[in-house]
Image 1 (cartoon, rainbow, N blue to C red):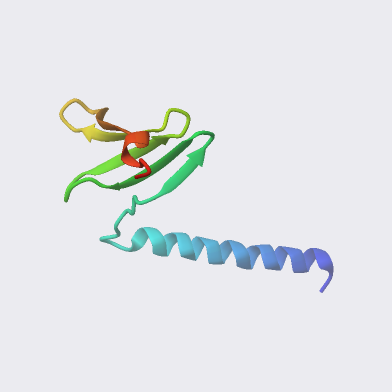
Image 2 (image 1 turned 90 degrees about the horizontal axis):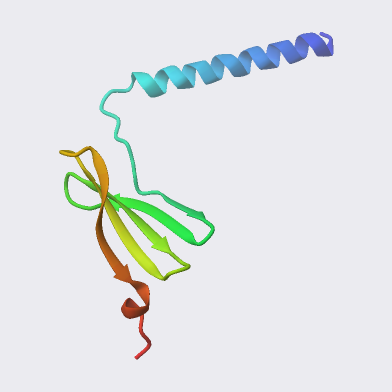
Length: 95
């Protein structure tokens, strides 16, 4: 078998494996979406997490201004609203 046929065979097997994985992922019923993720960009740290039994919140730390902002999705207005703000300097005072 020459290298061209070997490459085609490997790519074909890989494509079939990826297709089967995709079919299995989308055919499973009752799958749950997980939201607890964290991301960082510049002076900001963003995290999602449980706010209540039915809602999620976006927690945003502004490292430049030392503030924690909590955002929540308002289903009635279909908007993301600022729920609360905390000054991190007040929360983490050395005593």
